[in-house]
Image (cartoon, rainbow, N blue to C red):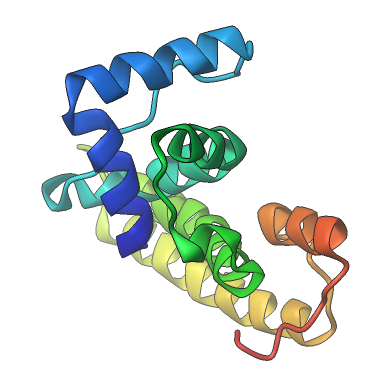
Amino acid sequence: MDVAVKIANSIRARSLRRRLFRSQLEDNDSEYEDLLLFCHVRWLSRGSFLERFLNLLPEIIAFLDTLGEKYEQLEDPVWVKKLTFLTDFMGDYNLLNLQLQGKGKNIIELLGSVNAFKAKLKLFASQLKTQNFKYFPYLEKHIELTGECNIDMF
């Protein structure tokens, strides 16, 4: 995740780079207009940050190529696979965090959300062992694209 944060923040932090990247996204009729800025204070937005970064990965690689910058990790299928897994997991983790926020929630509701998440983790582990990627859409898409299904790292 550190590499993704470094790349996204380097694009967002420099105004010229940001304008160039946004115009590239506009020219390509991208679903998104910009990258999200990641900071550790807003760690609850990690899932959203990773999802957008992953969806914009081809555009990011093309943009960095035009600048003459190379990041080996972006071309490494193992690193990208780990990023897809982290994106899927952080999406579910963010849902738990949202369920735990807000006024008017009692301890029973909060405990129910935590216990449901624990059960989900067990389900995820069993699904991964059987190579069923129903709950990991980004990982499933990556495996379909690369044809490489080695998931021993998880």
